[in-house]
Image 1: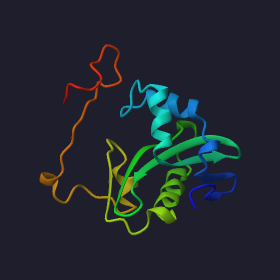
Image 2: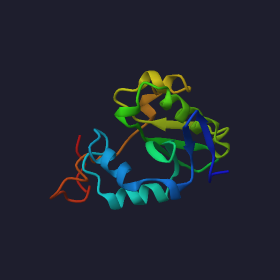
Image 3: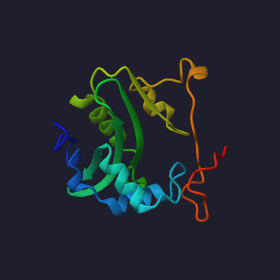
Image 4: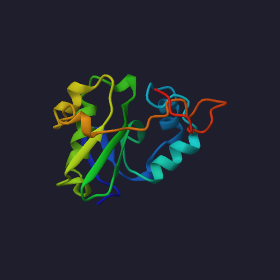
Length: 158
């Protein structure tokens, strides 16, 4: 059930219906975040289309988001997780993470990955740890891909 899954506390809910997502809100937040600074709205739209998305709502107003890229069999990558600053401190990130980890399409996966600079304590509650074998994981990272005048990511920057 990837459409309409909801779990909530009082007037808050988490829903996987992409039609409810406020793409402009998601873009505003992501384009000012440390991990997706200056991301174009077209890229946000494409990322939503290719992912299982979770919107967090207060009544009908979106206040949070996360997306999972997965083959629904062996692997998932958790990305773009946020709760608007005005709504933090209410346990909504925990409701969101429980909705993600309980989702029927994301059960019994062999590996989950995510990147975070500052939310280790949140993710560790849901089984995430540092890499067991960091020497086996590689990345291709292009942090300037969204910057104006960029070569489109052909140059790899650290």
